Image (cartoon, rainbow, N blue to C red):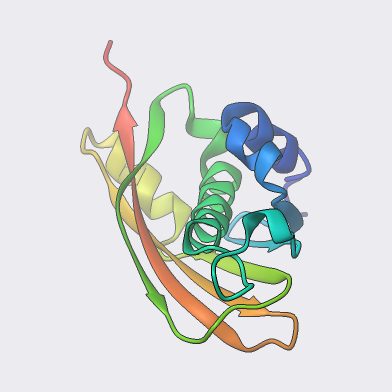
Length: 151
């Protein structure tokens, strides 16, 4: 039996208002993988008629945040997820609608065990951004941490 992650899209829009205004759509959400889309919108274009780099980064970071929410929602009473660092590599000119696939880089149970042992775990989420033809236009690694709540 798989967990229900249908709450993630709306929860992301509530927690991060930019998600709702940016046009990011959630195509698929599981406990360790999210696919998010960004429609082509001339209002977000850059000087070469594609999505601005900030939009591409935002799409990837949002997809990574959604997978973190899906994986760790039951533990949010104990900790707050935060981005520790991120890196993006732009591979090809991005034009048209984009899709970002974010994959949790460590098993959630392993991360939670570290949290419960009293540490502040870090874990990577890898993101691949592709155009409508499936060509990779950018790759990211977003390293997240779970900051324990203070008693």
